[in-house]
Length: 477
Image (cartoon, rainbow, N blue to C red; front, top):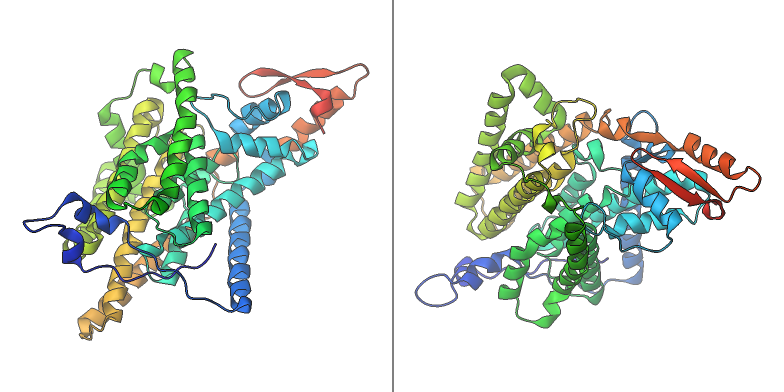
């Protein structure tokens, strides 16, 4: 991908008022989709250097993600459904990628599992871990580019991409696995739907991101209001490659969701959770750990869960309120990001009510299964902070020379970096659900190969964490 510069936004009055007599819906929503200018031509050597830097950044992100899981390294163990669902099914039915699980299609985890079958069996864990880390780091790079319309500062865009890669709560369930990749995609697709790339390669990447997310994570349908806003504001067909990708992915999901529902295997067949539990989950497990997981533990230990949550919520409300009051141009983005995170969290925990009763911020092995539902909402709150700080930097760059005005951006940047870096360091590596449910793949793979090594053995029955499955020995490399 290329590094895109940002064109000047239209004046606020022009963006907010489409016709005499007051604001219109198109003008109000226009601030969600700022224009992105075509980059100036660069010398071949400079383009190669920028490309190499981005590849290196993804490589560093992969290494950091692989280092985060303590105990048994992630490349020596297979996590969750990668072990007991996606890999066995890829071995049983090669390239049957469109199959309902949990009531919907999960394309990317199945693709990763199918890819793993082409490697020697003992290397399957490594393939899952590296693939998961590569998707996480790649999504961070994508956010760096796709946020260019809202964040003009290149260093701040790098901070935003790093915030996704080093998300503290992601270590509980999401990192270094195939099954966890859709949760990175969900955060990246939010930005894909706001992005207006001006090159065909950028459009293709945005469309692919939206399609992959929608075919791997049914929650992507909740971006429908954002897609509708894009259709209202942007009238040219060339602006809607990402829209087409999202729609195509949703159309793939429709028969899968219907099949899961009719067979009684969908969460839609279950009794939904209460709104009260979902709201409590959002407060205690999204807002409270939004400044860092270990910080949330310390606050809770010192003041109790309710007071700690209230304190963090007040701080977040003050930040969001200050941006809404002083940065009119950013109001559409701030409202959209906060509401999107809230809806994703509440919808998830309503359809999966058991996770809303298990606290994420208290480390109790086996009781962290809802942490994946907090990744996107927390990331979007961090995005609001980055966008707000970027606005302050732009005001200073526009020539405001008052001393207080010069100090305010510096203080805001320092506070942002301090909070994020503190959580990245404190929460970089800790034992959690991801470590507890990381099966020792070397032992399992050796047992499968020994069983297939017996004379006249063509199939074996493997007992995974959930079910027993039959595998053909000629498919175990």
